[in-house]
Length: 146
Image (cartoon, rainbow, N blue to C red; front, side, top):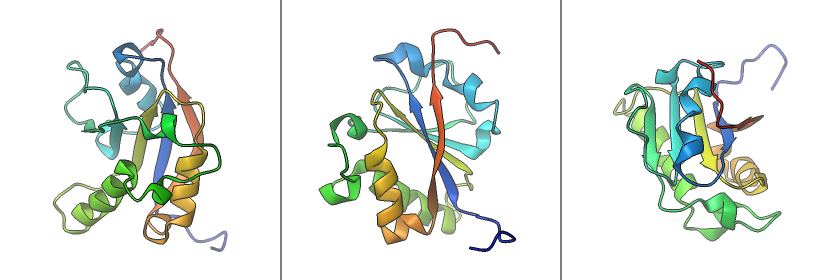
């Protein structure tokens, strides 16, 4: 890609939270610092906090895959990656105009390791053409100033 071309892929950002529901409650105020909430889709293995703005889209995952992925592996190797399957399904839904376009996917995890997600977005052709791993990491503390 030349410097003049714009990368139109959807950015995938990792949000590191502590264990439990407490950390994820503060995510919307962190997201507002770089994105409009209607342009964001959050993927997390915890329930959606009830006080979150309605415009913030959310998908509940059955497990936090990044905490279980060995270092140096990719989620696509498991052939059961819930994150990879959701990203493919979401893109097709946006293409069919069932879902509104998004600019950011935020994957909420308790894991400090992001290599599995980075590898998946790089080495899975369908996802690599549509999504890009953004090195910006969000770390949430219990103090959130809006």
